[in-house]
Length: 191
Image (cartoon, rainbow, N blue to C red; front, top):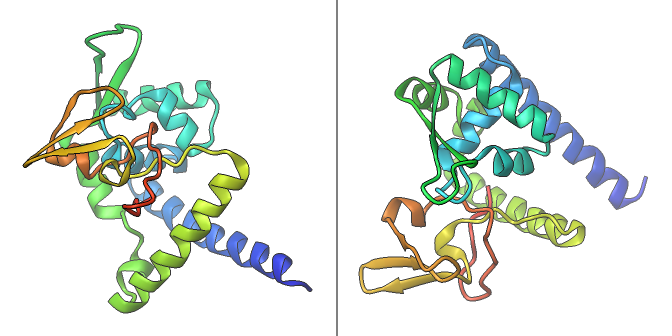
């Protein structure tokens, strides 16, 4: 078996282990896997990415699945939706305290939190580089962290998105965005 085949099998197995762990965590809360994945995504998404479209793109699900997932989470009181101030057709989603509590109790998965810190740092570097390679090779969006983006502008202690020209809070600067453009000078964190 050649290296690419071994790598493929290894990544498939890692993915399977994560999904098994997340599926078990989701079932504890009466959720489907995609619903827990949506909550986790919304916990790290910024205001440009906290929509059904961005979530669907990030999770690789259809628009219908994304909409139905968010509707189910809203009915359970795990998210709240608010219309966009510029485009009323767009709904921004945020976690409610109950939704945030579920994310806090299930993410990251236990087998990662039990790993030695040095192993986590090294593993994250390798995984991030592999993710970047896959995204570049398949033209997927990066969904990187704002403060590692080419659009990110520091103005003293304040931050601004150079794309939208809007101010960014310190919290927004540390969240992921679907408009992310990698900045060669700052390495983005890509969850």
